[in-house]
Every structure is written in C-alpha cells, then in structure tokens.
Length: 122
Image 1 (spheres, helix red, strand yellow):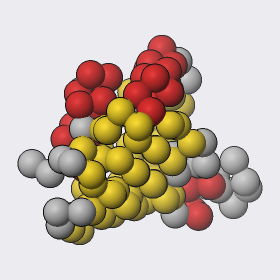
Image 2: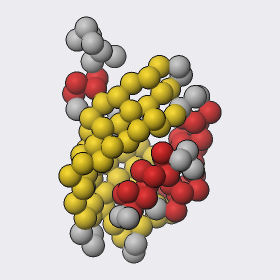
Image 3: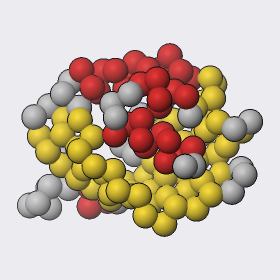
C-alpha cells in the first residue's frame, strides 16, 4: 500500500493517528477547498474538528494512482457526510514524499464540486 493509500485509509477509518503516521512532522496539507494545514498539530485539529462536526468518510475511491520514490498522484471520488449532508465530488491529489513520509499534499476538486445541482455556487 502506498503512503497516499495509507493516508486515505486513515480517513476512511476516522483514525487521526493513522493519518498522522503517513505525514512528516512539518508537513503541508492543502485541502481541495483552500485551507492550508502545517504540521501535525494543525492536521490533528483539522481532522478532529471535522470528525466532531459529524464528518464521515462514506467512500473514497482512488483511480489512476501513480507512485514514485519522490511523489504520488491519484484521481479519486470522495463521498462523505458532514453536518448532516451527504455529498460527493471528484478530485485529485499530488503528494511529495520525503524520508518515507508525505511532506506536501495538495488536493484539487473538480469545479463541478463547487456548484449544487441547480448550478449555483455552494
């Protein structure tokens, strides 16, 4: 299992420790909607807050995963529930690896993920 797959498995399991185990202590994680989290403390707060606000990963299907010693990329579909609403969207991740950990992870969401079924901006 690649580091990116392990990171995603941690999210699927709602396991903060498993997520952190894939990240370097000084990591930078950029969420698909823009927020930036630097280091384990910020990632812990982000994940814990999301889970506490009824965040639930229902499915995170990975496609087109590519891995090399220095980076990993993947396309995916993220299906989740947060604050009582169930949603899904397609996206992609670019991860840079340093010393066997993810040091930089950037997620991108399709622009369709930003609009509701009526075509209105969320």
